[in-house]
Amino acid sequence: MTPRRRALAALALLAAAALLAPGARAQQVIADLSRHLVAITTGFAGAEVLLFGAVDGEGDVIVTVRGPEGDVVVRRKSQVNGMWINTQSVTFGAVPGYYAVASTKPIEEIVTPPVAEREQIGAGRLRLEPERNIPPETVAQFRLALLRNMERNGLFQARTATIRFLGQRLFRADIVFPANVPTGLYTVNVYLVKGGQVVSAATTPLSVSKIGLSAEIFDFAQNRGFSYGVIAVAFAGFAGWAASRLFQRG
Amino acid sequence: MQVYLPIAEVSVDAFLLLGLGGLVGFLGGLFGVGGGFLMTPALIVIGIPPAVAVASGANQIVASSISGAVSQWRKGNVDVTMGIVLLAAGILGTGAGVALFRLLQRAGQIDLVVQLSYVVLLGIVGTMMGIESGRAVLRRRRGPRPPGRLHQHFWVHRWPLRMRFRRSKLYISAIPPAAIGFLVGVLTAIMGIGGGFIMVPAMIYLFGMPTLTVVGTSQFQIVFVTAATTLLLAATTHTVDVVLAILLIVGGVIGTQIGTRMGQLLRGEYLRGLLAAMVLAMAIKLAWDLVAAPLDLFSIAVGK
Image (cartoon, rainbow over all chains, first blue to last red):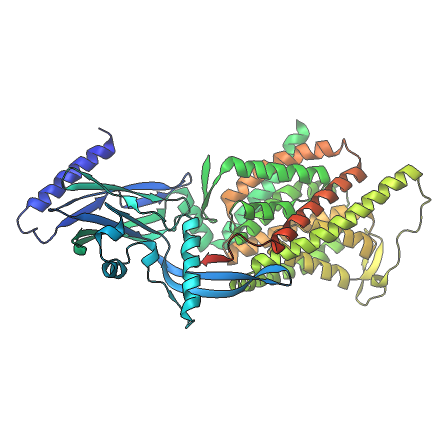
């Protein structure tokens, strides 16, 4: 048994116990993550987090992961005097910096379109509003461009990942974070779906943050920029000078 | 080996950065130029945000130009008066450049301006160098020419605010050196270059400075302007990535030493001809990128 599997088994037992306990009847789905912190260290090249949980009774499971929200400017190029230049831009507010979805079956087969729309299941159903009043056809075009670019950057997962059931009640899914994942607080939503409707939901938080040396460098650069600059220049000056002395001797 | 750059917030192969630093250092050592004009575009191509590429590139140039500056200083080839005029104007230019960079970034036109500046500058410098080295090759074949005057007298010698630059044996207006210094400062902040390839021809052809003090003074100026740019950007925009800079510096100092040694084996005018060809190729590539239809007409900028 790998440590991960052992943890999974232990938590699955806890999950089962919680479901069977009296008074927990309302909670029909519970889920947790193998860890609640994705640490961006100096060697960070992306990460995988295991999500596991249990359901009470029949149904399908959908999981969505949303990163911290921020503004995104979408720009369009057009040809001016033979050159391709940014000429038009639309700013969308509250765009999640990361979005992924996983489910046991294709989304369209298990929830009705209005429900998928309401719960914003799937990157294509994210509610993205422009900051100013802009004609709807322009918004639609820029919105698609935003989705396409985020997908290309690996920050919106284009495909729905698969959730696998282990037996009748336990399920697991892997959430993949690329190396360029933004830092901040993430929300993982787990839905239990029956007959096209969401019958139960659970939310668990996840934090992505810089840890160790990379965090210290970042904080130093942000909070004491001038001292940071002095050190950067001093190091560069010393390295350049020392190297030339070293090579002269050799 | 992937390494996460804490300021650029991207993960890049450390050996790719070491190799890039080494290659640019090698070319710099070979041709006697800083190589910033190659480094910044290359960093942007591998996915470093432009603002971080410019700031960390400036930091790297401090390392690549300091040894040359120290040895020129020892030989007495630095015209300190000229250096101070260039530097004072250069620091003002850096400040203006940083402000301009942020303004253009907000307007979504920074990529265009950087790219256009590169096309224009590299195009002009490459053409000039190509012509000059071609002539030098021809001259060598025809045999030496009799020595002429100390320097030509141009319009710059008649402007007001005249100053005496002892080391360069010049008595010229301080306005043209200040203007060039300012321009180089702006370009350092926007393009992440040391500006040697603008300053050197300006000093020779506009001010009529002797070649010996030109090289020493421009290296003196590059060290201080890039150091000032690094400091200013670190204090205001927080875009200097030391992890990135260290990797480039380590690769760069090794590459520079190898390049310098190789450069001594080749003849000057042929070297300059080669450099001209490389600079022109870069200009053509960047110009092509501006006119070729982009793969996706849309691009995004994620705010914080």
